[in-house]
Image (cartoon, rainbow, N blue to C red; front, side, top):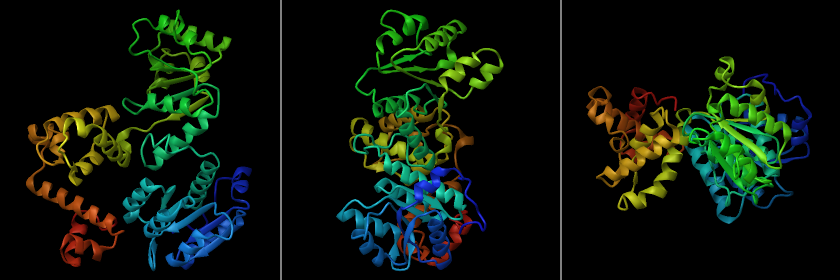
Length: 432
């Protein structure tokens, strides 16, 4: 439930304008939660239709009295589930944007629905300010949609990845310099390319100069046929700008001051402030290139995105390196979630290529991705630990499939409900 007395930090006019006159369908059977949400949304200026059953919601959403701007839906309903409601609507048309409300045990289910086209989800308990922010973001994104069929998800399915996608779309509508910050393998080049492709400059050149690889940075940027000469009205992407020598920094600052027809996007790691403090990077240049800043969190802090990336790469790479392989085991996905991924997506791709080349079974296993665990005795699990890890992965999968219903999950696992509950407590899943 929401924290009592929670206030939204959005006192700027945009939020009120965002909800004023909006027609929102609320599907929530809990009287206290539903009344609180409906009351707050109406205070924000929205018109709310509050429904408490899935069967009522299907008809109201399929044949609405007026266009629906958003649907707010609890995953657990008395006559079904939010997932069933969304799936039913998808089979016969394109439903309005769905913002799901879920407990911790329904996160996997919510993520699955995001993959199927839902817009977002919030987890209980939540502050009203967080809820209003996510709803406002959903409505803003609907006003300026990105064509998903041409531009599929770039960074993943987590809330952090969706925030990055929103920043990309906003940055594409601007023309001033932008800085992308992130560690190795976080896809900074992909973000820069997506900004260009979404912008009005998409028909013009996208020119890349990577200062970490250029033997002569001055020629690559300022020489005949260099970046500034060849970009025209397109986008010049300077990667690893933190590695620019002092002379290159001065030339860049001068070139920016003189102006050019194209747009400048740069990228660096997280160390720029340290370089500025040490006198190794020009603070004025930093302020010029960072008019807009897009930070990319490390892949290791986004476990859902790590699994998503593994699945995406598997579909592309497996037919070439392991044509007979059927899929990825649940244990492997859990191992990917638990890994720190210091090398980001590049590390994951390299491990997958190597693992597919060496794998012997029909499913990709943890030892295929992390063979060092077989070699290093300290990195190996005991048999008891391996058994617990396998049981934990299967229980999580069963709970995801049944929407957190322990009785139904026990049937899938072919064990007694009490046995499942005892195992969940032992494995730290009782609060899931």
